[in-house]
Image (cartoon, rainbow, N blue to C red):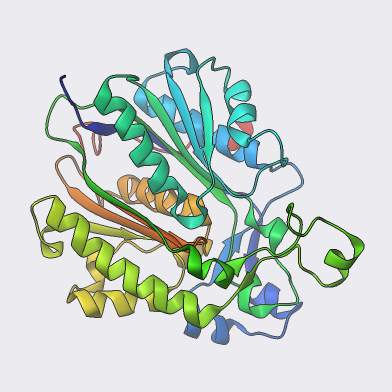
Amino acid sequence: MNMRRAEITGWGKYVPEKVLTNDDLSKIVDTTDEWIVARTGIKERRVRSATDTTTTMAVAASHDAMRVAGLTAADIDLIVVANSSPDYLLPAPANFIQHELGATCPALTIAAGCSGWVYALVTGDQFIQTGAYKCILVIGVELISYALDYTDRGTCILFGDGAAAVVIQPSQTDAGVMSFELGSDGGQAYNLWVPGGGTANPLSQKVIDQREHYIRMNGQEVFKFAVRKLTSCLNNITTQAGMSVSDLDLVIPHQANLRIIETAARSLNLPMDKFFVNLHKYGNTSAASIPLALVEAIEEGRLKAGDVTGMVAFGSGLSWAGAVMRMGAKVGAVNAAPVEAAALL
């Protein structure tokens, strides 16, 4: 069997127009811009407008990605969506996204929280390596603002909404996914969860009164987990790829908290300019975080053809996922200016 790596041939993003700044939050919860920046590095985030849904955001990002790849929906063999904030509990968002794109291929959703997009990328890579599919759309999209308790400054300051997508196809060179690691520690699941609204604790007046339908997080435990996994996973995937972390051209970490990234950088003995950071603009966009940073790194010229990046995410589950990827010839060779969202919706 001729096993080929999956390389990125198209990329796109969408973020809502509405900006929620730290000063805006200070008017509705006990916090300040200085407090938030000092603890997280986040200055603002995007939150949905009345017309934004998980589906519309994913579709907008996907149109960008297909345009860059020079493809139409008819060319897509498979759609893999990373998402934990669906439009509806049933069916999964991948089905709505497929329909709105005009595609006829299979579509599936992976709910692995902030680690979801790397899980989705690795899943797509396996299908390409086996030859089952040759053109896969991998989407990370989250509309997290709906699940935030804006009386809880420990969570509402952290998250934002957004979407990003890539097209992956079989590589003709050594470009593509070089190694990966997927992981889960379900024993720590209650450190980041939504306790109400599921089948174990169905939505009720009691759930609403106790605000159990919103995200709850044990910040200290998640911080420690994140630093440990960002460090160990990056070491593991680079070793698997036959290199060291210092050989990477760029590290794209999950955009959760600048202090997590800085702590990991010190542990890895890497300079901060080796890390791509855009969380000051978007906050934590969960499954959209890694692809949104990846797309912006390409658009800003931080990644070029032949460059190798290490991507590591961590989040609810508690889960983690990482991948090392070499950029193909398409990266850096295309003007990837985003399409106006209004033209796509």
